[in-house]
Length: 310
Image (cartoon, rainbow, N blue to C red):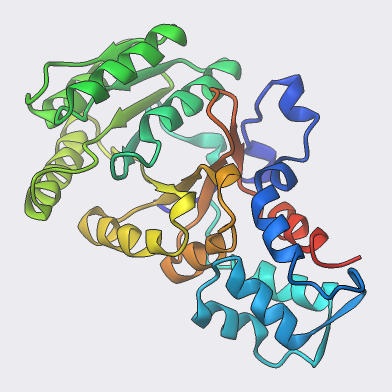
């Protein structure tokens, strides 16, 4: 099941500090600063040279193939609206589903390599759902690392959320099964299950993830309802190969990009969405449980363009 939230169904964060910010302008501060330095010394203008725009997009870590796609047929002097139309179109492969009538419990399987921010993202999702009156249960399915179980347990305690866990080295698919069964028994809205980020070999990782998906389906027909990949935004375009590998194993339904505030490679989001033909669901813009915002292509593109044009 592919999909992003329709605007009317987006679960919004309830933090006055966050509401007062221009999310994407703040998150893209390093990217905007980097690309703004490439605009001519006379300052920003209404139209910018083709070659300058091309250089700006490449410098923001948009892949060359995607830059060529976006720039094809544009004039020598490019206006903001001309470029905006092209950049927005790069997110056309993100299908939309209606989240207003999802099954209960709604099972989300969280996938990604160690260090990408899986545990923190799970905490952010949990906080977001709970702030909107939903009940959540967590499954500590990364049994490969004792630290992963401990970290998720700490977040569960902070957020006053039940968690199903076992000892390091135990069967992660059994954790997934028990978490879903508990969610059903307790009439819980969201069931979020962590997975191992890296095993000893790629073959082990493939086998483990395939088994978890299969066992989820046995615990609840149709589960997992979303397989969400967490990508580290600081990796830029190098994250695409990683995403393709996971997508090939189990079929990813959507992406959450973390650490967007810590990188000058924000342009990689165009490549990630376009090349993978997958929706970017949320972006992480900080370390607190509140720093997760729904991805909006229009706001994202406009924030970038504000750093280039008048």
